[in-house]
Length: 315
Image (cartoon, rainbow, N blue to C red; front, side, top):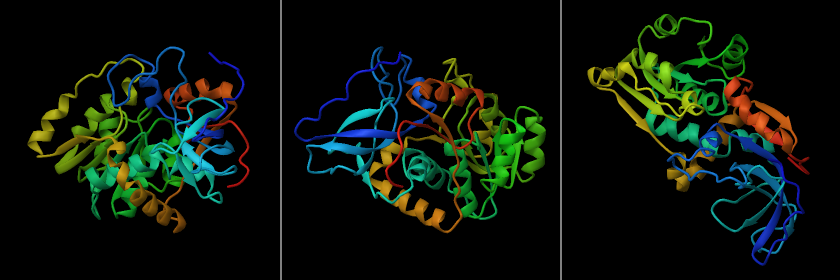
């Protein structure tokens, strides 16, 4: 339900932020159900949780001046009260807000820590990334390429697979909607899979588990295939974790909050060198937030999905 009301007034120690972009992530769908997770569910009547970026339009807080650009948990709303806390980070005004939302935020940090800490790709290894045309998968695969690995994406549809190879620089991409997944994995990964960055779970996870190399690392980042149903069928090929002495590990990038500066410094360096590309699917207006979220589950997005709520003054 869309609610219209006056913008809130900041109290002492607070500032009012005008949201310019709000990020749309598949995890938001899990917060709408009363299920256990790494964050509590969003209750009926509450603003849907989401990371965003905006500009300070009124301040009664020493930490922020009018005109400052800040990333924070904006939620699906045009104005939000912020405070001087760990959730709100001032950003240099000259920075591109699309790049911040696509790379220098939770999305980029998730790809960075998952791939570098758990995946640990080595030169010459074969890395497979599912949801490779999406926000996190596209960055994760490029990080593996920078490390010297051969990277194969998995995405749904010819257009997405084209973007994975042509825009994001993967070596190949498997179209799970039209290709025989097992045969394609065998063809594109003749030496098997050393690292698998999993964003989807379900049958795709099971298929890649069947193609693991000895000492493989499986990074569990998301299970978008079951976010709508809430069902999590167990993989039949899990026995390969034993026979290949492989590692499968989940993670939460927020556990590495103190290392975000490290992640962003490397991501900025790689982008400046032209080794890291990003792309966005942008919707317009607060009333398109639900359509944008639904689009993640119908394959409508390439790169980071954003909703533009206001025109940036800079960046």
